[in-house]
Image (cartoon, rainbow over the protein chains, first blue to last red):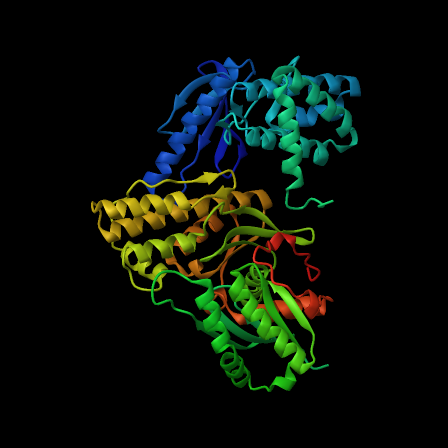
Length: 212
Length: 330
């Protein structure tokens, strides 16, 4: 069967291969940018491909489900990975009861906490980048991620989730945020409080936030 | 009703500009006098002195060019920020004096917003994503619900500052940007320099340090250094701009600021526009560099939408972000 492009981003395309050596696979390919020097272009696409694969692997080691990597092609800037069946958390939330959502966000909080505890920053921690697959939640798209223990970066990650809740899941934001924080704290321990505090500071220094 | 006339004063950095615009969208005068330091970069106090010594003459020339007299001025606008404090204060003092003498209202406008607004006026772009690149600013911004929002910006120095500082170090002629562009055209070998895009933001200070070190090593030709500096810096600008364009889905892409005169950067903008299905617009150089016409035109937009700046509260703000400004005219 033919390859099918399922998403085109500014940086990478996502391509579905229904039969990659007998399996359903997702290809993440960072395309050539003609506006930059070929050497710079090659270096960036190569580095980011390797970097993302590294983060996907480290996340697994930290106990956070991520897609399996089937093949890595740095020169072609392509990661071939497991196609995760299931529903984006963003789309799953409206279908679930409040209780189900609370336990879902407890789990997401716990997994986010595990990432941070393992010095991993996701960089785009939103419900669009999480797939609910049965009882597990798989984290995807580490393209903006990095390795860091800085409380500032953890706080920024945390706030991405807060902002997502406020903009997309606003009717049940309070209970979901509470569950997320509980789960996060369970994984992070006392360190979590520093992150909550910093997240709050970051929010207040934000550009469109009332100063009072 | 006759169109209203605004005289605008720009003095955020080394350019002293006096522009005159009318409310029917005409630029009647656009006089600029540039402070060229004997040595090194802009010294804020020296630039401010230059502006105070010249502001009277530049206003007079602008009035003559516009073929009006001071009595025809309906209100006075000035760049209230962001910029160098001493320079801003000099322009503000001139604007206050003129407004009080003529007994007309005073309107303080944001310098960065003015770049975008005069760009829209000059090119006809309606709702563009704007890449504003100059000696003091590097901002990717677009209009969303009442304000110009910043989608990406430099975390430290501006791209123009990076280019100018390197040009001075390498002993290139003033101004640095065009000199670098000229040499870059002869460059062949790409030197590996730090490419610093962090999410949607950029950093140019590491690039400047690295290219300066490569220059001092004596191992590279000036053309190769200029070529590598341009290619790396503009690739960073390109990536952030493209991502913001994909995110906002704006139908137009506006390039403005002094660095926007660079042909390589214009090529990058064109390429991205094609890729993202947007129409590119380039602001003519006289309105893309710091100038008084953009302050006058934005003064008109602001004044007609009720913005007034009483003298008592007309303090300059050297760190006035463009996304702090409510935009009632859009």
